[in-house]
Image (cartoon, rainbow, N blue to C red):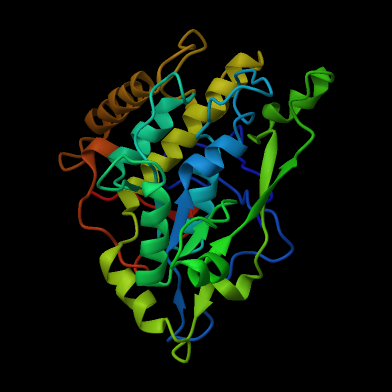
Length: 323
């Protein structure tokens, strides 16, 4: 269902520019469905973080051996964004916050924490995250993205059969160690080594008034709100950082999308330093334009009033500054 995680090299940093911060990374013959009729609802999407991060441990820049158990969270960003762009509310369920010994690219998880998108069980015990996933799926009619069969959780057999979405990891052919030219796509756009293919048919993601769990899905929309436009801007900046970092590592220089606030000597750079440079750039723009009521829309300057599914424009290209 996801095609490729894409950020164009000439995408601009301003939110009102025609910038493609992400394309679809879910790979399937049919795109994620949106409600056709007014009373149809989209199910809450729950991501089994440890399961997905483990299966995609080779997606990052770091070399990963077969026996290496270190997880990589990079896959979570395009996965979340593709659902959000299509109007879905997404939450990521984790057993705990792993340390640097267990996970690469920890800034990704820190970012999702700031976005209030991470959910944890009350107790950090073995498989408590599985029980939280199953409980939420049962209570709210949510779907779980996981390859875990949940066979050892008695009483949840029906939920494990009906509310679980399995996936495959599909190589893109890019970033092969044997073929140097396989990274040349970075000169035009961002993509990863793998895409994720969801198994289910699109109809499973939508419920209508006649479905038995319709009311539970409706309740989930009250409990779990869609991200704000300010948060969407933060996702866009995160994509720009990831893309710029990969271009630097593969010796393609910095892409045009960050040249307004970074120079060629800025990398390597940490994510939060990247954000601070963007803030400084926006502050300079503020002074130039003399917009006294302007504030950079970043994750720690978020607009706290979440937008409903009907209010959120799902396409990041059209997002405007919220000030």
